[in-house]
Image (cartoon, rainbow, N blue to C red; front, side, top):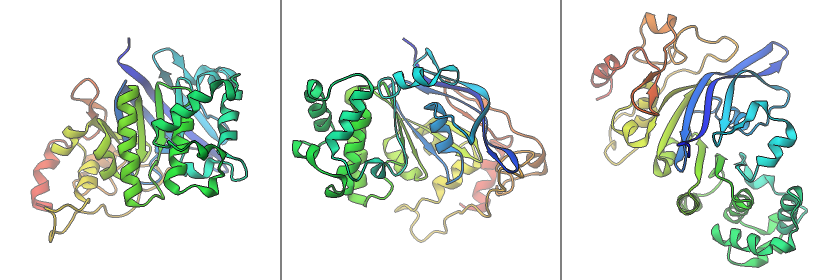
Length: 331
């Protein structure tokens, strides 16, 4: 049995536009271990959702894959598969919950009709598999079967999110990718959904990839964290490693900007400026225009991947030197 659920190598992805191909993902490589929760963090526009949709094989114009490979479950070469081949493994091997998942439910169709459509697409009958539907709903905390006869507008935000999660788990996939699963939910419901995800992942031995701009939330549930910036993964490792000592300045600044009890009364670091953009892409380090520890070399030389264990790596030519400058700047 392979220890790697998803293997992405040298992935370069862009979008067709009036300016030509605007490259978003640049040389993205990552190995995602099986049966773990992986958080993908980064600000809006960093390429998180593009990475997720490409892994799922949703490669349609204007999305364009320039080069790279994606191997799922050690045997499915996603970028070489036909649409019919991809449809066979979607839902059963790898499943996906998109952003604003609550809005993915058809407002004029009952919940059971959505389950019916999923099963029919796989050549399965709804009533012959009704126990599977009931069990899946119970797994996400929906014990009242009347929910199947309800329309989305009759459900609360938390209930709709649970229904969507149930739909994604219906065919018992090995891998589940969730894009911003708690967006639009109040704090209490967010906590309930996170608790639910951890429970499901453990019980089903899932590989769970959770994408969010909320790094504090990701650290509550993840075993590993991938930090994205400007279409690159700038750091990847076990969550406790990143908490103890970030290798990349962007990770450090993200973590330091989260208010805690200990930071009360202290001035929190912030990340100045904005990303230069994908059209005028930086020559050197992608974070160089905003990094407080930048040097002239950083602006000219693209950093290479530096691995420090089986999965962990970072991309910064100034580690550990920049760590010595942290106390002067912030501590």
